[in-house]
Length: 146
Image 1: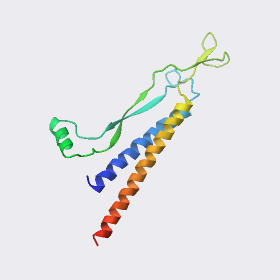
Image 2 (image 1 turned 135 degrees about the vertical axis):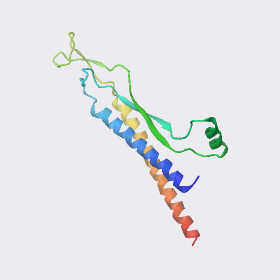
Image 3 (image 1 turned 90 degrees about the vertical axis):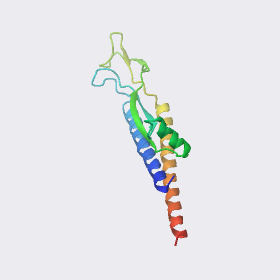
Image 4 (image 1 turned 30 degrees about the vertical axis):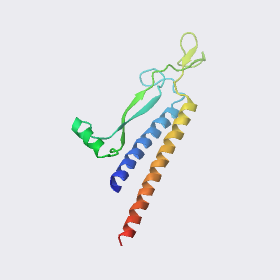
């Protein structure tokens, strides 16, 4: 693995974690949205990651395993909606209340979102540190070669 491939891997992780933070922020911003464009309450979204790599053939997988290559990074494969039902709340004056006076709130849990935000932030920080360490190794290598 070269210095530049480690920079590439960390940069893909930074991009993926930034998108994850954006989705978490969107969830928190819509914690009280009881009506979306389709008329239903907001549904929490989550980000799914996948490894970047050439997995098209057995030969490419075998070659990467034999060469002990670490991979090519990570990317967001898709953003999915959480299908868990949201909590019901009694508020007969709310415009979205049903005939019994209940409204369905979004299925966003602020504690879960904050834990996910801390996790994404720590992952982002770890990759920034990895990039910094790689830059230090590159500069030390250049100093040695003088």
